[in-house]
Length: 283
Image (cartoon, rainbow, N blue to C red; front, top):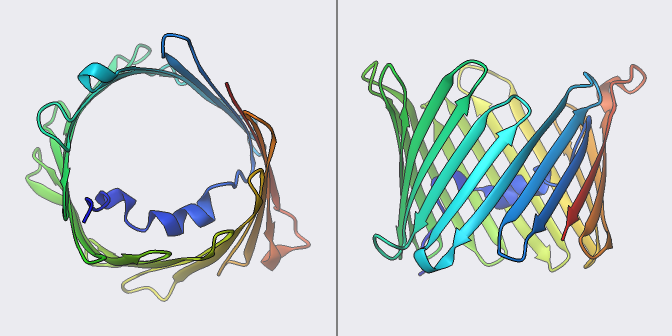
């Protein structure tokens, strides 16, 4: 059996159906290009149609394949600089070690993180350490898989307070075109999802969550229909009567357009509906 997914990716298929391809209230631009010597450049820009705020970031990536090393440099419009160095399969097959740092020149704020992962048949382990002046925070996760069944645990421990700040459990089952996932966060937040690929061109998902001591249950369902290799349609609805639609069209090789809209059916006449446009270039 191949290695199971990491804890953060449990239930990812169901989440992707209702999150990817929607840009409500945003105009987004994404540009990717690669030089002849293998350096990748990615530029992301988004404009909030409600506030008018514009945010963007620039990322460069260079891979040293012979050494299993990837170097990433980042900058965003909040003037935060970041560098991440990742080394894979060098210490051991299935291992991953990353050093992630950031620096804000305007405030002088610095941050650093060491991220490690190891995966093998039936097991996927993660351990990250956030460095802080008060004391580091340790994040750990483990996922075990057997015959399609998946069980995971995730925790965070704040050494400055000697306190467990995250204590999560998850259980799931995945087989072919069907995935089921459930989780309990900190003993009082419960969630679940079901993903089903009905056929090659239709994907569906159901997501729900609730909090102990509250009658408020959050529920949503969505579907994706792939018309052909260049065109796809998406739709979703939640218990707040918010209805979303998405349309993605590859205009030509390397150019993709995404249109999305969200209708607030509960307050239809009051307005508040949102539109979004995304444009992606890749060369």
